Structures are given as structure tokens and as C-alpha cells.
Amino acid sequence: MLLRTKLYGTTYEFGSIKELLAKANEEKSGDRGAGIAADSVAERVAARGVLAEVTLGTLRENPAVPYEDDEVTRVIDDAVNEWIFAEIKGWKVGDFREWLLADTTTPAMITRVSGALTGEMVAAVTKLMSNMDLMLAARKIEVSAHCNNTIGLHGRLASRNQPNHPTDSVEGIRAAIYEGLSYGSGDSVIGINPSDDTVGSVARLLEMTYEIIERWEIPTQNCLLAHVTTQMEAMRKGAPVGLVFQSIAGSQKANEAFGVDVAMLDEAYDLAKRYCFTAGPNYMYFETGQGTALSADAHHGADQLVMEARNYGLAKRYDPYQVNTVVGFIGPEYLYDAVQITRAGLEDHFMGKLTGISMGCDACYTNHAVAAQNDIENLAVLLSAAGCNYFMGVPMGDDAMLSYQCTSYHDAPSLRQLLGLRPLPEFEAWMEGLGLMADGVLTERAGDASFFLQR
Image 1 (cartoon, rainbow, N blue to C red):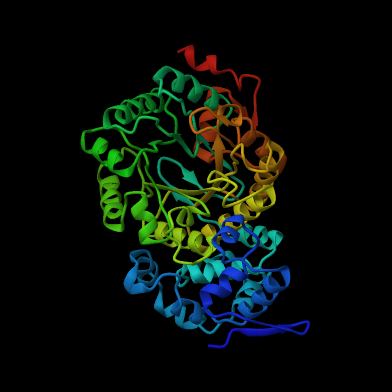
Image 2 (cartoon, one colour; image 1 turned 135 degrees about the vertical axis):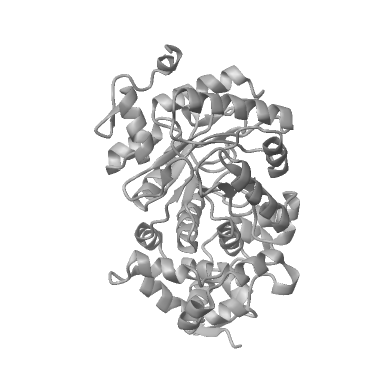
């Protein structure tokens, strides 16, 4: 296969589809550090010109990790709808981009095609899109899911109430939950990253959050973001679990670094369907992020974007209630500054939606990245306009346990007001019943956590 073009008198040739995809990627510090990025803007443009002529069938034939060597590749490839794939395998990547952006291409048409895509196809078309292209295409795609409430409907923006505490103080976490609820944060999930991953500690926090949900009759779900094996054991012992969580990656080797494999995730999914107290049918919550596989030296020479797209193909196996890319959390070694973080957030959101999963974003950064709070707010506005399903809600946007910066309890109400969005419908009705919201707008009672101490 000849992957060659001439640009302004210079010939550019790429030795493989993997190399071509890497060279076509937007500038990312992780790819640069791995030695697989384009050497110049001209080479990047040349790579995109060649990639635009590659067929979707060729991309399927050239996965980032061979089928026989990697269970993530097998999960994704085995799930391809062969009938639909036969219709699109001759499409060139450039034509696929034009089709996605065409006014005549409907959401239903995109949803149908998503069943025939692999991660490499999704990543390839993403590389040919501008930021606005990514927003326009993602906006077309509506992926909803139901656990105790319904996420992903048009015109709705949810928020995860993330009341982390450095010592897992039950009372400290409870107070933070109440503050978030008073601002309308928590319709996606009340989700805690525990500092103590033991079954006893996790079960204690699950019971506390469940008690709050039951006492106040909140149409939401809880989740403890411990290792999936800890959650499985807690479920077996009777702890009340709403969503089952795990971080995942785009290769078998990278998932092994997380201490998981497909068989384990299959078992967790089966347990969730048997033991979760929520109505379902969507019970799983996954987190991802560009650079995950590279940080584990498990990227197999592929670029960050390709490996991230493969995450979503794996997640789709479990029909998740929600997935989010923790876009700036992994650090500037992989996404150096606000420009790269913003691009990655828009890429990941689009790729998740195109794959067919309910997609949100932790618009965030670490304190050693070249970024600031305004940059994260900018990204949140762009993603909200693109139809992002949910964001994080953290007290003051400063996570005291994970030591990173992200969106606050105040941000979801601001984004809703700015763009005419509302909470999830069941949650909005609950807030209106308590007098915290009226006609989609927070009332004077909102923001006062002591409201929840009066009963």
C-alpha cells in the first residue's frame, strides 16, 4: 500500500497506516514525546491529505494492535455490524467527514453507521476535522441512557456531584453533597473518588449516599469510583450501588496496568444488572483520557487519539449510562497547554458520541499545565454548545482529594442559563418540588446547603 503525496515540491511517504494516523494528528505533547508526531506542519497537512483518501475498509484491516494480540481489538472488531460495514467499507475518510457534516445527514443515519465503526475509523475522521467541525457533528448525535433518570436528551445538561474529601470524612462529604444539590449538581450521579479503596470504607460511603438519595427521594444514582473489584465485593455484601465504575484504556496491556481485563468487566456488568438498586438498563460508568495508554507504555506505537477512540469501542460493549474523558488530568506531558486540552476535549466528546455512547467531559487541568480556570470555562462552553451530556461539579472547582482544577457546582447552572439548557427532566421536577428551581432557573433558596438540614 503506497501512502505518499507531494506538497510544494517535497515528497512525503508514510510507512504504515499507524504512522499515517499519528502524523495526521493535531499537535500533542504526548505524541511528540513518544517520537511519533509530524515533524512539521507541512508533514501534518500532507498526512491528512493522504489519510483523506484511505478507505474505512483499509482502516479496519489495520488496527493499532493486531486482532490476535489484543482483546480490545477483538471486542471492537467482533461488534462491527457486517451488513452496514459492507455498505461503507469503500468510503474514503474525507468523504466520511463530508457525509457527517452534510445538512442532509440525519442523527438516525449517523447512529446506524456507528454500529459498523472501529476506533481507527472514528479517530481518522476526527483528525480531518476543525474544532467547529467536531462541535457541529457532535451536536447532531443524541445518545441517551437511563439509570434512575434519563441522561443525554436534547436541551439537557447534567452535572456529576463530586464531593471528594482527602480523608473520606462522611460528614465532610455529606456537607459537600448538600451544597452541590442546592445548586442543581448531582443529576448525572453523586460520585465520590475515595481515598481509601477498602471494601468497608467504600460500603460506608455508598450507604451514606444511598440514605441521602432515599431520604430526599432524589431521582439520581450514587457511585464510588474505587477499583471495580472493590465495588463488586461491596455489591456482593449488600452495599447499595447505583452505577459501577472503572477507568479503561485502549489496549489490553494498558488495561492490565489498571488491573482489569474484559472478563473482569463482563463480570462486573453482570453483577451490576443483578445487584444495582437503580432501574437501569444502563448501569456502567467509565472514565478515559488521551495519554492513558502511552503513560503505561502500552500504546503500541499508536498516537493518543487513536488509543482514546478505542476506549469508546470497548465501553460500548457495556451500554454505559455515562462515560467521560478526564481531559486534562493526566498532565502536560500528554496535553501541554489549554490549546491541546481544548482540542482533546472536543475530539473525545465527538468520538464518544460517534461511537454511540453517552458522553461527558471532565473539563480540567493540573496545576503544572499551561492552563487556567478561564481556559476550562471556555472548553465547557464549547462542549455545552456541542451537546455534551454532563460535566463535573466540584466545590469551588478545586478538588481537595485529587488536587486538580475542574468545573464547579456553580458552572452547570451558569452553562444552562447561558445556552438555554436545563437539568435532567426527572431531576428538574425534583428541584421544582423543593422550590430550588422554577421555570429552569435557580430560585433564591438555591445555593444554601443548610436547606437540607431542616428536615
